[in-house]
Image 1 (cartoon, rainbow, N blue to C red):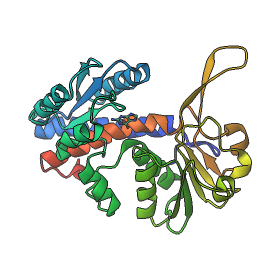
Image 2 (cartoon, rainbow, N blue to C red):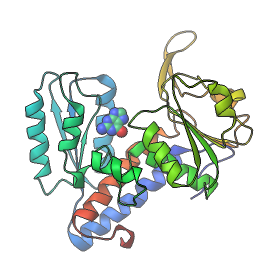
Image 3 (cartoon, helix red, strand yellow):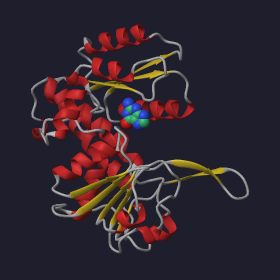
Length: 298
Ligand code: GUN
């Protein structure tokens, strides 16, 4: 699936193709098995960025032909009430995927909530069982959506990743750690760098694959990148524009980095659009697993 021009890896194009494949498989699932995959998204509070994500998830779920359910709960919702909503969704056989939008308000125990989602319906791959399966390199793991989208684009561009030196800048549970586990599974030599890493620029310069997921606008410059390396920019940062207004930038300075890298994802239009497409993919996979259907046969 080579879908990008020059050294730009277009997540917009890649995700459109992935969503079209998913939509086709959903049609077959409906026609041959009378199953409609269902995704429930739970949002607590009114964080504006989370509201936009949740709206987009709902829209794209419907566009893929799936059932979409949204639960919007008040900021001061009690943990027990949130757990009750999840329990009902766990028991609802029209729902195959449950996603609780993070971050949750501070009074709620995130770990307890995430692990109350039935592992069969975890589409974020954040349940401890799925984290464990990914750590052991098991093919049964549900893989977190952003790392899944990233590894798909990397393998599409490079084919085998075996033996390559990779650096992941950022150690979050959502991106950095699962990304490192995936790269290791592909037999890369993996460095995980973070805010305390010494000589970060020199560490980055050694890497054939650089994944930036630190949340620091344009921190990684062109001269940090080994000539010919492949760069995946997971950062989405809104910064002030000269002359007013705002714009989105990644964690990598695109203007300098794109002159050095053999391939690079832009922001916006890179890794970002792959995240929701992979959420739909995980929902489809869980619907198949719950119903003992081999998804590769769809
Ligand atoms: N908040 C930011 N990214 C994510 C994600 O991938 N899943 C969930 N549940 N919350 C998020």
